Length: 112
Length: 114
Image (cartoon, rainbow over all chains, first blue to last red; front, side, top):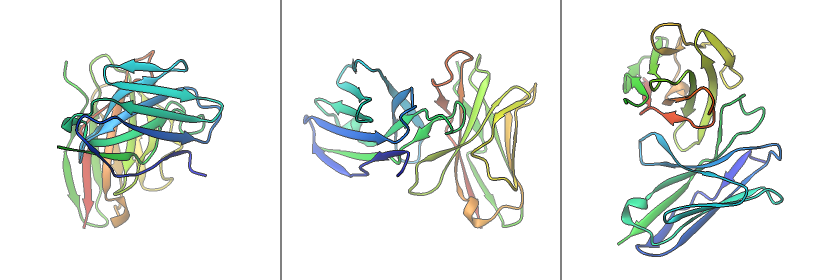
């Protein structure tokens, strides 16, 4: 089983719609969770951390379910500029000390 | 405040040559991480360094790859005798001392081995 699994997509979504993706992780000892965004041929950029109680940042909402070992990201009122690959990231003991373990990403395309 | 800087941005090497990739962390950051992203793959952790110390190199191939972060100057990822399979994007990230999971990435070096 892969350490961090995501549906690669692509998700084709009309502008203004709401879209959600999930990610599952295998290491129950994981403690920190993040969503990163990566544009084509660019570096990953931290979008938001994911807290146990769930958290919101503008149009973005992240949730964590420790029992089922999954993380979700919800994007409301999607914009064309939201088109990118969204990377689910966890810190996994054994994944390299304080290195992070990345999923392969979910590709999102917002269509006008 | 300049972000994480990496150079060169693109590097072409022939098989058997050496590749040297440099990374300057953000000001005030003392932790550096190297990741590799193969085409159509996710980022893979390679090595975690602090000044003059390798903290964790569990993701680094045992042969041909080495990394350092000297007291002065940038962190260097060195690949000796490159092979075609080394072609990838190599990203460096840095974090402040007390927030090791708050990692900021540089623009990456795209290595092509011909």
